[in-house]
Image (cartoon, rainbow, N blue to C red; front, side):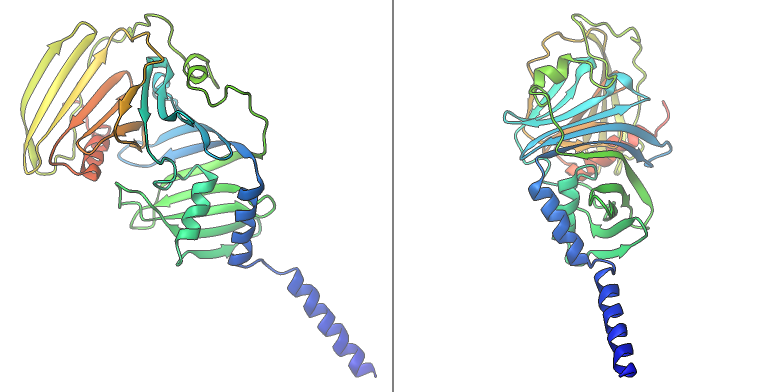
Length: 340
């Protein structure tokens, strides 16, 4: 009798331990999907650090999402306060806004579903679901997935580690890794609130262009850029081409320099310093392309061009021969190249 009693105790203990054991990969994925399905939205603050080139870039981010397709991603760069940007998606389209410079680009595309977005909850879960070979492990506080990334124009960042909080099933940290397994992009979520209350104008373009949000400056009428000198920068990545011509033009709004490169891949790089910013904030520049991250800023890209603003300078890269990925390589190499 005593023997059977001991066996019953052991079986009961095993059942209890099994019930209290770690959740499986499938259990966690089911819970993540359920969290996304049941929520009405979220708001989160995060810090994104980029380790590309010779310098580290750091951004403070405020991310708001309202189900199903409203997004607002605020990026603040301490090194380029006037270049702080907002990625906005509403019923009118996808916008990249630079309020301090009165600049706005409008896109008609599938952002954010067309590529990985390490700061968006939905994108992280989607990347896990789309990778049948995704690995899974647990720590005391986190569930950790390692998955493939989906960057359309960048194959140098093939994988990512995604950390979720065990209690809330919300993202805590993301590390985007290069081919050597080193973290190039790191996103750390400092707060994450499910089902927040948003003001009615949170996702409206006019409100975001004309209201100072989270310390991001906005432009007034006829704002003047006091730093009028154009410091011409040169790309380090030339893809077999050489600089063959430099043209300098004084425009009504400032200075413009055009660099012509010829060789294996011909391309033109235009840099322009605008001294007076336009006042027509509600006339966005239509772009038949995609918003693409250069690490230090968000650019507008078509099949043959790439344009962006950084530290008060407008850049325009044009080529019929560079691929989209090659245009990104040239553009990102400009930030690490010393002034010639």
